[in-house]
Amino acid sequence: MSTHDYVLSNQVGSDARVDLNLLFQAIVSQNSSATEPATTYPYMIWMDTSTNTLKMRNAANTSWGYHNKGYPINYNGNMQIAQAGTSFAAPASLAYDIDGWQNVNTSAAVLTVDQVTGSVSGKYARQVTITTADASVAAGDILTDSHIVEGYDISQLVGKDFTVSFTAKFPVTGIHCVTLRNYGINRSYVHEINCVAANTYADYSFTVVGGLPSTGTWAYTNGIGLYFNMQHMAGTTFTGTPATADTWMTGNYMTTANQVNDCATIGNVWAMEEFRIDLGTVKGTEW
Image (cartoon, rainbow, N blue to C red):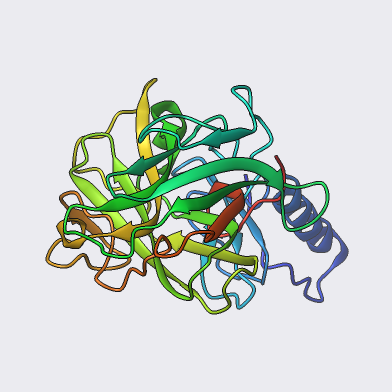
């Protein structure tokens, strides 16, 4: 285990050989050490032996992020698996459609869910179409896409930055809230995304700095570990006091007060593809 400043000074032959050997040891060991290298460079790799974590320096050479191996921790974020079918008319609230996905719906809106070709050929998307509109949002109304990540898969996110990313289109411009909640539904994280062009696919991502909290009721075995929700309508019951964006809150929060209503018009369509949760601050590329 070794680190090096990667600068070879003028020196006598035997000292130069020792210095070169130390440099090579640093390279082959991924700069492994319990403390960070004294001299750092953009995109430098460091194996932090104090936490057994592989880290990578950011482009500005100002901080370390977790080195992304490329694969997400969640299941079927690319919407390819649809064992129960590819089209679901008026599914009940909490009924699964495309594998691992469901809607939670307490509103008067009725919808259809389809597996469709995504933003480009070769990609799949989960698409929702409103067939009965609900333009008047009552306090207890909510309509959300829901996905559950297993407890075994989220244990690596405790106390560590992770990144949520997806490609989506919405029928209405404005704020749409993404929510992460624990098994006990007593810890919530709400993030606002801003749709600036309706009915147009766009990439969205955000990093949860500090990762999952250690407080609250979490499950790290089989079963529910983490709820992911994408809101399309929400009444005041779900905005809390209201919810504060980009921080873990105690309680069950789903949206901020800025959430728009995607369900007000028959024929409104939204779709999502390539949803993923990656350890670290960089979106992965492998499935």
